[in-house]
Image 1: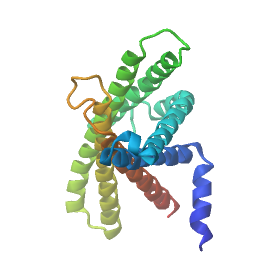
Image 2: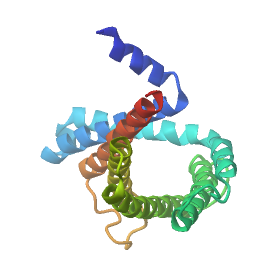
Image 3: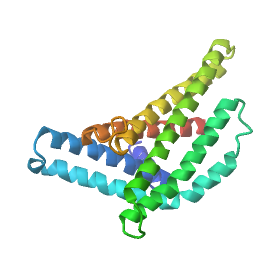
Length: 234
């Protein structure tokens, strides 16, 4: 029994998506801890805080490089979903399609920004980072709108479900959509923070708050993935 969590962690780290989730959680967790330590005293007086922030930056950079290979998997998902003809609700269908478009465009924009930062190509890196971040923000808002639409549909189902099993299933889905909204909104707060100055609260978050928002989003995402996996196994 004691080895079950260890084996689960090993299995998670053996997959690309699992490794990315762990790296994301560690990156934001280090930023939260490091930012908190640095905020309590002068950065020069907090070597641990600076080290944690450095680890966070390196993990984030690692994830950016690995996303260079995500275009095809995103394209495969978008082609599989298509125009969402299997969806019963037109609003959910088109919100999902637009979400996929935003996600598909995000990757090449981020790749150009990364290449410009690395002096591989000549381009305005800040402009491309802003564009990729804006696409991410749009994707997050579309995800929130989609979850809200599904929740409104589930509310009527919860009132009309005669079956106990169907009622429990609808409640579990409603909980998952509510957590998805929480995760997306936390990420959206950070997305706006990384936009150019003058856009809402852009640039106004201290490192610890960025870490907190990202940690909330990451842990929520891990929980949702685990819950979906358990549900599929059941």
